Image (cartoon, rainbow over all chains, first blue to last red; front, side):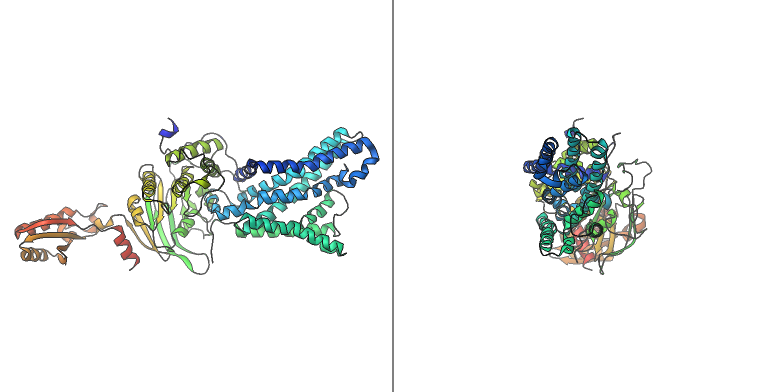
Length: 284
Length: 335
């Protein structure tokens, strides 16, 4: 019977499998921004540093030490070089996450969407998990995925490269780092998103959080007060990541202190999310 | 993430469809919003009536398990909503009054998305989204972005998303809010069809009495968080004392005396006489003996006709005075 002739019928479930709620939320969250053409162009721009680094690696391996002048550690195919690459991608991390993540919870709160979500058989963890996965995907898109490509590229062109380093250990380090850092950054961004009902409000706070703290850290460094660099939000992630990549600290702060700060931020974000995300808007 | 995926539309055989609320007290802050609310509902069309701020929406949120509850207070479809709300929600559809759409999505995309979140496989959800959008009359607009929908279309879309997973109960919070008269009638017709012909339980929360009269068989009246009354719609027929409007000419004095001799109360109302008859006394039946249809008003009409004939009183008008739900509601709420 054609659909238009059926009226209301009861649903007969098919044998197809259904997906977990967090995956359904993440899938939609990932697909939605990709419908914007300008974002795709921006995304392509996010890959430019990886292409440049790939070119430099190629040039360095072929031209020897002369190419060292071009980029220092950033061009290295040692683990440190890849952490430096991820660090260098912070502008794109900042921009993409602001665009993709700022409205994820704020818009749902504005449009009473939380009430719809929580009238379905899903819980808070699935909701937050799905949203965080969306942010993490875009984080990995400009950090982890280029690292994979660069490792493979370097392995293919480096005359003495071993698969152990470039195909296993470095990608593994990058994976662990990006999943942990991306997860934590996602939760912090979502926590900001849950504090407002307008994504522009969240973007302002995100800008203060990323660029503001980086500026303060730079001023502190200029004034010779290295310990104040601990306020640098993204800098702490890179600094803590230096433990994983066996590279020198990125800030004048002990990497373990940075790790503690990152854990603290993550904890606060989880508390905020648990407090703010609920189906009922209670006005005191 | 939470445990296993929940399949909606579980086997309906032997399932408990009831909603049980037991001594429910609830407060967001200090002031209680619901006070000792207690009722049990079987599947059917139930109106939740009450003035603004009486706790209707909060009661629906308790039934959905969207607010923290104590064990044993609210049980829906056999699940305790304090601990098993997720399981119960697979069988519940919710149409919120405010917002309730996700901007940026097409109508069919939104309904399918929420169907999937209810535990439906993606293909089933998409097919079902098309079906319910046809059913609610949004077939031609289903690919448009829901941000661009009119208020009436948004209400229909919200109804469609509540129906997509074929719930056992539909909780509708002010479903006709913001609709023009024609849109209101068509939405009410849909709800009535679902409740009366499609075997869905419906709780219609509203302050519009006409909506309840059009759809519901039973009403719960809330005031200041208390369940004031529970009765069947048109329960006036079950009342033993019925008022009849009488107008005529001729032997009026004898006619009125005859009525009073029969035990009737007579009050003049302009050209009319309002005659209150005790049908229980007249028919010799107790309230417990009459069914949902109530007392046979023909007995009262015949009695008045007899007195009129005996006193040469020519009747111009004789009918039972209809008592609207509005009269009952306001008399209850303002009491």
